[in-house]
Length: 256
Image (cartoon, rainbow, N blue to C red; front, side, top):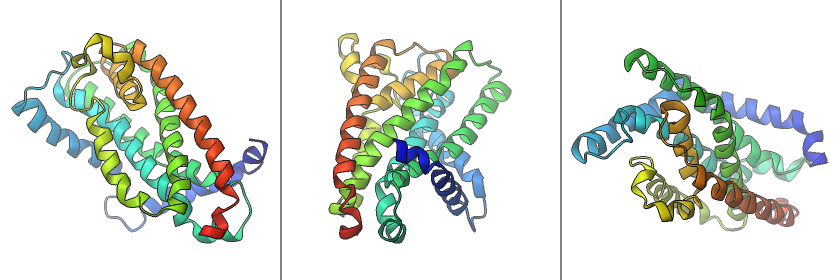
């Protein structure tokens, strides 16, 4: 961690570089940060809200879905970018010495900019269109953003290291992310899960993140039992991932 801190300026540079490249030569630019979860919200509202009549904990379904899609869009983007980060920065990794952990960490931090933009849009829709004021629990939202970032980092460092050795990861990852999305209460509330199974449901940390966003933004029930399990699961996966990454770090330049 001391070497990681010593190279913090490089981390800032990598985040800034990725942020500029992300929307370079695009027509809509940063508006894509809003359009991605917004268009997904429209699709979810039509098929799950209108046709399937999915419950939404007493909240308007578009807001219910959007509050979940904002963190999920961040997470899926961060994990995908992090998994491909070492291979995508092959020249940098093979020619310059620095803590390799900075590369997947930057890939996780960069999409936070999009998350904040989409979150601002969410609050505008909630206040201006639905005439609803966010609850005081909004002050706790940074804690769930942190949990989302740590979850993405925990998964990302595993996948980044594995992707160097096994390039099959890039083919498997889209299917894994899609499966993970359906295992996360985005289109449906966690209240549909039986009470006795909810702590086990917390083994998916994104379930707690999604329900935490809804609690902070809309005042839905707080996922307290799930939160403890999710925090423990993230801690275990992150520590194990860091150990595996450090063990494989010396081979990255040779394999790449």
